[in-house]
Amino acid sequence: MLQPWRRVFEISRRIAAGGASVTIITNGESGQAEEQIENIRVIRMNNLMLAPFLNSKKLLSKIWGTDPDLVVWYGSPFSALYLSKLKSLGKPLIWDIDTDIYSLKFLFRIPHREILHPDSNLLQYLVTAAFSKRILRVVADSSLVSGLIVPNMHLRNTLCERGVSPTKIAVVPSTIETKDTCVTNLTNGKELRGKLGLKADDFVFSYFGAPNILRGPDVAILSLQRILKQRRKVKLLIFSRRKIGNASPEEQFNREEEEYLRGLARKIKVDDHVEIIPGFLDRKLLQEYLLASDAIVLPFRLVPSEPPLSVFEAMSLGKPVVTSNLGGLREIIGEDRGILVGSGNSNELAEAILLLAQNPEKVAALGKNAQQYAKSLPDWNCVAAQFARVLDNACQTG
Image 1: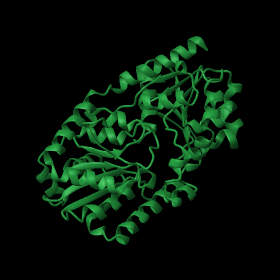
Image 2 (image 1 turned 120 degrees about the vertical axis):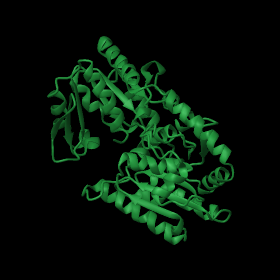
Image 3 (image 1 turned 180 degrees about the vertical axis):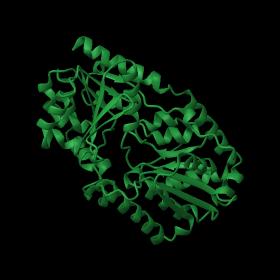
């Protein structure tokens, strides 16, 4: 289960277990318009992000049908453009924001093929970058919004810098359950590599996530040009997590992105050192691959939702993470739990990989610190309790 659905689900099912009635209205990705998942009613709507523009009456009707005491709108700062459509509900509204705000200068460094692609979802980032101060100040500080929830201090500070009152913002982090990390009997790295067909003397670094270029798998491929000049025994594994056989526009986009990655590896002649594995692997098998790796690379061009749970997952396995110097990732990685590199900078990524490949003691130290940090995270029960307190306060004061 991926972010952001994972966060929404884990919090919702715990609030429901406490006796509240919880309904999630989410994107329509299946033929089932409505279903019950545990104690949560799930209603699906096509194009939910644009529903307030295209079909506001239907959206309002679905919300009214749940007889809510309070509404939580989960989304990016882009949501400010249409949250006023919910004013007629007359209910307390909590705005749960999980997306950073990037400048136009930053966004225009992203490859043009992504900016121009209709399924890359970059429009919301561009609009927010152009009008963030105005739309946030007008909407977030209005009586329409009872409060805002963000996952880290970075996003809180960013919103405050753009005029949002700090008294309206609550920081409620995301987390993972480290007990979900599969324990394998094959704890020896060489034994795991033998089982998985990996060479014992290669430095193996892995990327896992959607093949979307905004998440940076192409940066990992490009880094091999520089790495191979100094070290030949190296392997990049890309676990391209996509729904094979699904006919949705999202899956078609991911297939195109994956093909682009294969073509890029061939073009720059590093394909002998890259293996792209498509689809969602069994959880235990994926974790065995990650355990067999020396490091995990998650070189985001931008972070689609804060925080990326994949970073926590890699850290919980005791692996050093090389990721981008963006947003809340600075808080997670710190100075001694991994390495931060410039967004989209394949040379910096290559230098980080070479540094780790030449210093196994550093790999071990960073991995140990990363795992200790992951174990120190609050569990979902604690996170849900923090979230519920914000909702209770809004109901009492709204």
